[in-house]
Amino acid sequence: MYDALVIGAGPAGTNVSYQLSKRGFKVRMVDIKKKVGIPNHCSGLVDKRVVDLVGEDLVTDRPSSAEISTPFGSLSLRSDRMRVIDRVALDQKLAMMAQSEGTEMSLTTMLTGLRQGDEGIVATLKSKEGFETVESKFLIGADGPTSSVRRSLGIKAPRLLASLQYDLRRSSDRVKINLNRKITPDFFSWEIPNGSEVEVGASGRNSEEVVKAMTGNDTIKRRRGGLIPIGSTELGNGRCFLIGDAAGLSKATTGGGLFAALDSGNVLANAMERGKDVLRDYQRSWKNSFGSEIKRDYKIRKLLDKYEKYYGLWVPLVSSSISGINRVGDVDYPSKTLLYMLYSIPMRFPLAVAEFISNLVP
Image (cartoon, rainbow, N blue to C red; front, side, top):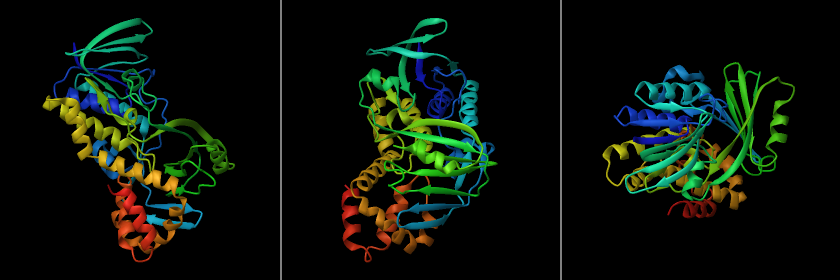
């Protein structure tokens, strides 16, 4: 019997496997893919804290500024914390680290059945060799936005936004974000420098039309797409847990989910090591960790979707707070930046700001 059966070998699954294996747990990790990290569905823009976790060797670019465009104007922000990393190399590095600590890994393998008991779980796996029954004390769903583990547990799925990204042969030194709701009504579009290439993408309705317009005459080196989960869900039940995108742990304001994927695995590994009422421990610890940011971001997203008038505040808010935003701006904690803006100039927009904050703060 395994201590943990991990479904999914993306950043969430490989990291939690590594964290558990180095703590002495017997871990089996499976993934439906033929090769870890391929295909890659995500951009590589992260905050420096992610690099501190995974290593400088994965960094491919260091943008120094970001240009944010809205229907009300554009703004330029500076940051020394932005990094772009090789996402495929990240997954593969974490998988190797997990295996070096003893994790058993099986590719081209999928979960087809799951049964829970008082002492553990029984999972049915399918691979090219046929069906296999595996027993484990715990099961961890790290299998992304369309998680089969989540479905097996009967847990409601988060809202899923389709996204499309092209990797272009183009040079750039800044991140570009377009928040024009007339162009991308559901989310936003982006341009991220990555060495000798640029990643251009959009999420939501008409994303293909938007990305094609952003491409122009540049050479397309790769096309990729994926789903962004918006609105976190339950973290599991019984002896089964969800982490990363499987639990909807992406920031609803930016779509970023890499730090949450890593941190949720770390929090769960700590709870499993403590070993007492693991699910409740995981839920409580996550709420007190990055989970509070995920919750605030979702509230912000719903408010911006409901009250589009708030977009009109963006440019004057940021313009009047630019030096402070450059100081406190954080890719992983966007709500900190927004709250800084709102609290720094309440006298200029008293009614709108008061209404926004009253909806944001419980």
